[in-house]
Amino acid sequence: MALSRVCWARAALWGSAVTPGPHVTRKLQLVRCGLAWGAPRSSKLHLSPKADVKSLISYVVAKTKVINGKYHRFLGRHFPRFYVLYTVFMKGLQMIWADAKKARRIKTNMWKHNIKFHQLPYREMEHLRQFRRDVTKCLFLGIISIPPFANYLVFLLMYLFPRQLLIQHFWTPKQQIDFLDIYHALRKQSHPEILCYLEKVIPLVSDAGLRGHMTELCTKIQHGTHPAIHDILALRECFSNHPLGMKQLHALQMKALSRAMLLTPYLPSFLLRHRLRTHTTVIHQLDKALAKLGIGQLSPQEVKSRGVELGWESGYRFPAA
Image: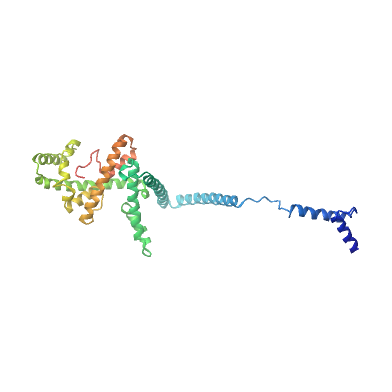
């Protein structure tokens, strides 16, 4: 029996004319098919690794959005006040990220085309200036949060003093209106002090015509009259040289001017003078860029922010500032 099976197998493999039995023939066909086509494949369709990763990521993102929506609805129903703060915080982070990308794009364009800061268009110049101020405030918060457990105290301080420690992106709509009123009140408080210093230095003006013109101008302002632009420009020499030049100002005068420009007055005299000079230089550069753009091209929000920066009151900028 064994010998006959061996003979039939040899005959099938070497093409013998002898016809094997049906059982052996079926086995040989299976063996040949296996040699020709390899191992049998699974009936399931497998995706490529990249497609699997993409489908997994899309699934995770979809589930995250659903969970995030449920979480927002839960906070809005049970903790409405906390939900307002949470929403403002998340929107603030998104706005900071958008500002950072725009600032990076502007800096890259400046580097490629060798453009200086004062050569930028008005909106790009204003964006870079405001972004630098925001980054400085954020860095200050990060530095005071470095000691162990200090971050809990920083969160408490940010909640208690949002105007001083937080940037505008993290203010609620009500806080933005209230803080603008506070800034306006701070400017108004510094104006009488600045006028008092102006009256004290009037006798030091060498030119009699300028001395009389400044006396008349101070009297008009004290009576609530807004001076014309040409009246202010006529006194330019007094503010570029002695006695009201930047180098001749005293510490009290620089502190009053700093409060009028919403700059901190609690610095040494040389730092106050440096900050005032830098700040006024940037304002002058912004004014030149704005003149090229045209005031009519500004949006209402840009006009409001520009007025807060320069201290406009009913369309009037204080001359000494």
